[in-house]
Structure formats: structure tokens, C-alpha cells
Image (cartoon, rainbow, N blue to C red):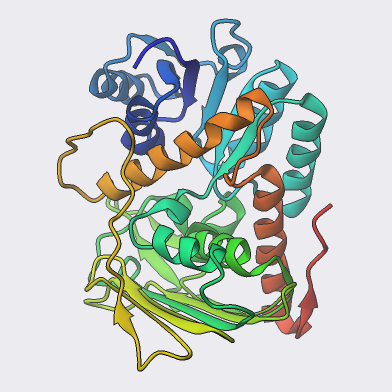
Length: 364
């Protein structure tokens, strides 16, 4: 559509693959410009998105008066400076997860967002996938009653030696690499949204693959994690277990269980078999969920590819974000949510290094 909030995207990876088509699908937004450092990648991404207005200088880009909203999809190390500059320029901001490299950076971004009065959000769009949104809805509707325990386990082959190497930065924890930040950040956010913020964590964060040879022949030392297990105490009094490993050959998918005083929810998802079953405590057993997945208000006909589900999920998130631009309430994750997740990530690393149970600061 046209005539909505004028959106400028910074970043051509996830920015062009998911952000651009999601903003195009969602009501209320108009993608008008895109920015990236690499002219070649920028030209290719702009052509694919049908965008003529491009820039290689994010500093001047975020200050443009003809842009209302800056969507930040850069490498993680740039999130902090780009977001702060965009807020200082009076722009609304959407930032990819993880929100920052450190919890302190995330807090600075959260504080700047509050002072700016602009609408801001962290892109935890997995809450809106067709697999996870029905579960979130059931929990919000009180299906479980008082929550007792939830368990979420993910498996993938991304770092198994049989899998092609990923981008070099993914193996470097200093650049925001690894799957505690890249995968479990979504899971921490989802669990917190359903059952309350984590108050303490006990974790094991590990690396199974010590070196990786990139396609150009360069060998890099791996400092980021490929396998992590978290035990969480939540503000609701419930417990949660979240784990992920990306070194499993022939694996792809997740399994979720949630138990409460009034019922149980069990689901599988990802690239493997998908299912969702639930049952009240008084029922004879679990039954398959019979609802229909939510779709964006604008009819879409996207090609079947890996990112399609993410595009639809982000479009739904963007629809739910619209009230925030006029001062209304929204369920879209805030910078506070992004800061909370980053605090859990840092506490998990402290715990794994021998800290045992580590407390999580309460959201301000």
C-alpha cells in the first residue's frame, strides 16, 4: 500500500529478505528507501524489493525528514549506534533481535526510546508464526490456568560438519554470533510473554565445534555457542526449560510442552512435523487444535521458500504495532523486552562459567 508510515530499512540481509516484503504486506506502512554499506549488495536488494531510493551512509539516512520509521536489520554490532541516532533524529524505530551486544547497550537504547516518545519495538516476530501464535493465544485466554512448567527444545544441523559454513560473524560471540543470541533469544522472549519475565537462570552454554573453514578457505576459531540449556525461574512462579543445539545431523524442529493447573499444551514445529494438541485437566485427554491460523489483512501470494513464514509473522506483528503510533497499547515486544532478553543471555553466560543460579534484574 501507499500513504502509510514512510519506512527506511537499514541492512540488506534479513532487511531485504524479510523486512521489506513484510512492510509491503502489512497495512499502514510504505517502504520508500533502503540503506547498506556494500553498494553491490544494496543494488541487488533494492532491485529485488522494487526500491529506487538507496543510500550507503546510515548516519545521514536516519536523519532524513522524509522517513518516519527506521527498520534496523544490520549486523548486531551496529544496532546500538544506528538506533540511538535514529531516535535522536525523532524517528520511530524497529530493531532486529538481539537488541544489542550487551545488556548495558540495550538499557541505553531502552532509556533513549522512553525519552524520545517515539514508537519502538524489538523484532521478536516468532511470537506471530502460525505455530506459536495459537499457543500464545491459548495461554493469554487462561487455558492453562496457573502455569506450572514449560519446556521448549530445538534441534538443527547448522553447525554440524556436514552443513555448509555460515557467515564468519556467526562464529564470533563478540559480534553477536552463536545461537543463544540467534535462536534462544526468540524462545526466551516467547516464554516471558506467556509466563512472565525470568527472575533467575541456571545455564550451560557450550561450543562443540572449535574451528570452521569458511568458503574462501579461511579458518576461524569458534567462540560462540552451538548448544545451550537454560533453566528459568519466572515471575509467575512457574519454571521453564529452554534448550537448543545446532550440531545435530538430519535434525530440524522443536517440541514444546506447557503444564498448568487447568490444562496442558503440547506442540511440535519448525521444519519437521507440525502439531498442536491441548486438553483441559477435566478432559479425557489431549485433542488436536482445530483453529485456523491468522493471516495478514492484505491477501498475499508469497512463493514457498524458507523465509515465507517469517515474512507473514512479521507482517502480523507490524499490524499489531500500528496502535503504538497514535499512543495506543500494543502486544509487540518493546525495547524493554529486548533488554530483558539480553539480560537473561548475559546471566546465562555468567551461570555457565560457574555462577550457578544467577538473578535477573526486574524490568524497570
